[in-house]
Amino acid sequence: MLSVVVPLAAAAAGLTYATAYESRAFTLREVTVPVLPPGSAPLRVLHLSDTHMTPGQHKKQKWLRGLADLQPDLVINTGDNLAHMDAVPSVLEAYGDLLDIPGAYVFGSNDYFEPHLKNPVRYLRGGTGTNGARLRTTPDLPFGELRSAFAERGWTDLTNRHAALEVAGHSLAFVGVDDPHLGYDVLDDVPADTTADLAIGVTHAPYLRVLDRWNSLGYPLIMAGHTHGGQLCLPFFGALVTNCDLDRKRAKGLHKHQVDGHDPSWLHVSAGLGTSPFTPVRFACRPEATLLTLTEIDSPGSSQ
Image (cartoon, rainbow, N blue to C red; front, side, top):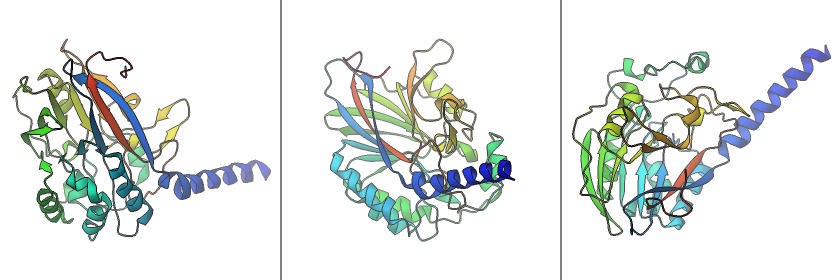
């Protein structure tokens, strides 16, 4: 009998920890990325992703509001802001003063489609197709309201488009796509703007077709979310799945991406801040936002 009770008790304790503590243990990560031209002043970029907000998540909202104290130069939002029909006001209140800082964003599936209960076994099998939302052809979340609010506060929409911004004395060029996990991405063959101080690719889901294209077109920095860092990770093993075709070892954090002999791009994948309301668990993968300090190439102390 004891051989059954002990594993069950351990599993219950692990589930309680993952649900009651770790899923709310919001963490700020900091990394340095050497991508700016020699002689450039550092640029501080706050990467937000996968907030999956519901109106009652007051601790998350308070923590997010506090990120404005970091005084970043730029905010990049890689989507999945919503998890409830009535969450737009909560998202805007949570982002607060960050909306007055220059920002750029793309949407993810949970900006368009409300989360539904799904079989978690399918997720853990590591499939790389759509998550089922694509089967619903009409969005049911108020993404238009959120887009209008972001536009009113000056954030730049990168949904299948290019854009340029001047931020803290730096000229930045962007390319973005709509969510590749839904097959909404439209990729082009326009090379990165080499006249800008930095060209950045922004996507919700880090599918290889997107990363490969942007690396081949010369984008030094690519930013993504979607993976939740695996959400369920094991010590000494890492993420179980990425929910796309990106390898598990790059489910979160700063890595390099390179194809066909092109110069490598830096790839930053955020583990994100939330979960689906139907699976509110994280294990060995705390919810996070990341402050990236962009520095000149080969500057001392830069990340490798």
